[in-house]
Length: 505
Image (cartoon, rainbow, N blue to C red; front, side):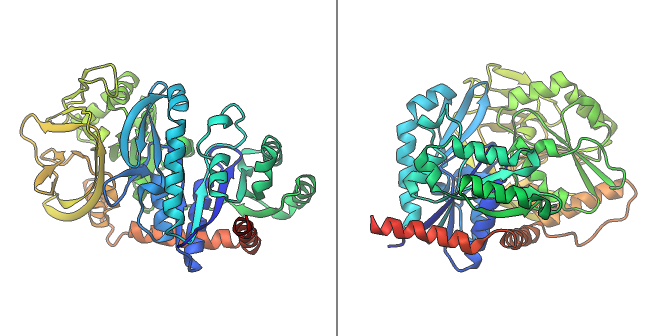
């Protein structure tokens, strides 16, 4: 029976690069011939991933599984928390909705259930893989939460995993955050930390050496690596915490301007990632009406709370500008999932699942009506997309709690599994679909961008990059980068020391 050799990555705070480093080590261990699996016990994210059996997990764990060269399963992320409204979130257990819970109720009532779920998943993965790369969340030094936490040191103890602590030097005060985190740990947890990694370094590493020496002498913990910031990494972001990095200002050096509406409960915004790799596209994230201007393509992405996010569109004035752009035929307007629902005539929530507003008028740009339902659709999808007089084989995934019906003449977008999915106007200026990942289909994306170019009097660009190929190259590039800046041999030795200790107990 296989018993996986574990390693866990925790951080001094959120957004220090835990997900990316777990991805890197999944790739490194897989390259070195180890059957490797990622694991995150509890993930709070609105970017999700659909497994081959139609279950929903955090997107980061799905991407990490891809880096490891394996299919994702719900054991890699048994608990997913999707913030919904106010202090409430949808709790997803092994890929299916469990119930909506407020934070205090979840912490009080779900704790023991969570422990059992985590232990079961750890056992399944440990028995089927050789290496397990575990990701924590936030910080293990949240002393007000540690008595009932389900994602950091308690998981390290359950898996008997050595821990690498990550600090983000880009945020400033990296030595203080590393030392402070270590000092706030219980002694037994501090002993589990085999060293630290300083991430996102920019500049001359020699200027850091005196600090590294001091840190090792002061804490007795080795610095296992200083990893330089890696630009233009085509790997999905975990959640909207990184959206502040994106501009809202047009780039006149790029020929095509793409505006993505960033509402408060934006989800699965990784749908737009392929455009970042296109040489002629500039992608902007929009939060205010004056930022919209006259883009070539407006994307309304997914939403965890369609009605509340639509109210944001209306109250901010962005919705009115989108309707004006449609009247002027200035832009292609493309809605995905929640964004697709917003393009319709009406959105209903009769059971108050997402909002206290039971009915609201949409943008009325497509002849459709949506009702939010108690049942959640999660499925990998494929079909034939018809647009611009051409047909394209496409794949994607659907995650939505809503059923959409047509209210008038509506041209279907995709023929899939014996049904017509999505809707488009005759001039293809307004398009909507439930297919997440639609822009990851290279042939369709190329044609759509070239149609936009043609409307602007620009020559087409043929043979654009394959985004899937770019992702594989990104995994390899990340692995090479991390290998070159961490003490991999020392990490291996520390992991095996823990293994020997387990075997002698």
